[in-house]
Image (cartoon, rainbow, N blue to C red; front, side, top):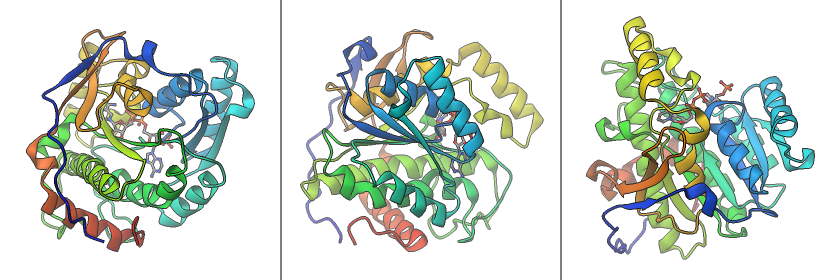
Length: 318
Ligand SMILES: NC(=O)c1ccc[n+]([C@@H]2O[C@H](COP(=O)([O-])OP(=O)(O)OC[C@H]3O[C@@H](n4cnc5c(N)ncnc54)[C@H](OP(=O)(O)O)[C@@H]3O)[C@@H](O)[C@H]2O)c1
């Protein structure tokens, strides 16, 4: 179904929420799903939500690592054992996405954080013949969100938070070249996947509003965070440069996840802005800024949406 009424209210210029975590509501009784929950920002996000009382289901590629993360939340963060569960999820494998969605849909769901991701890896194709960063970061999440929108629609203040990157602004998206056949650059493919994440979040927001759904869609990013994400660059020079940059200007996963947590739960956050951390390295504010024009072109977003439906077989409004 193509939307007919593209008339969203204008977004505010920018918005800053100071000490956003102190203002988050109690999330007791709510359930959150976080993909990539075994480490990095996903684990930090799950920790933040669980500390506010939410039950969390971590989507993990490796269940042994997932179990270690679960134990860490229980033993170090004093999360109640019944508050945290794990389930296997490989976003590159659509059968795994469907199994995970079925598991997630067995419980009420209020918050879906599409966090997992890979960055700047060598060229590899999914079973559908799609370059792996686009397939993992965007398509797997598109299918998962599509499968869970109905159950989210029954939730309390239900939200989908897509974790993107400020690098989306440099992305170029050609939905007719998703195999990377016309020259592959690991960095450009990452930016493209993050542009797809951001376009998806914006377009999902429009479609939810147009269908009077209570679910809201947010896009957030962690700035530069000290996680293993940057260790996969094929170029040693880029790997070293990024590691140095992460050490000098990056944040640890906890503070880096502040905008994702704000988007997931704050009452003050506006879905028409792109949220990231700002200011202090250890206690950042959450800053919402307008989306770049490249993410708000609705005809391009519709082409991305159609290609995503075709490639995943999941049509959120089908
Ligand atoms: N770190 C940064 O500076 C930065 C900056 C901008 C945006 N981001 C975004 O933040 C998000 C989280 O990244 P991070 O920094 O926390 O990286 P990370 O520590 O490498 O975590 C990435 C997570 O994604 C999971 N993952 C990778 N491929 C997967 C797949 N096929 N199926 C399911 N899960 C998969 C990983 O699982 P395993 O545990 O099995 O490896 C891991 O848990 C990503 O979307 C990334 O693009 C990060």
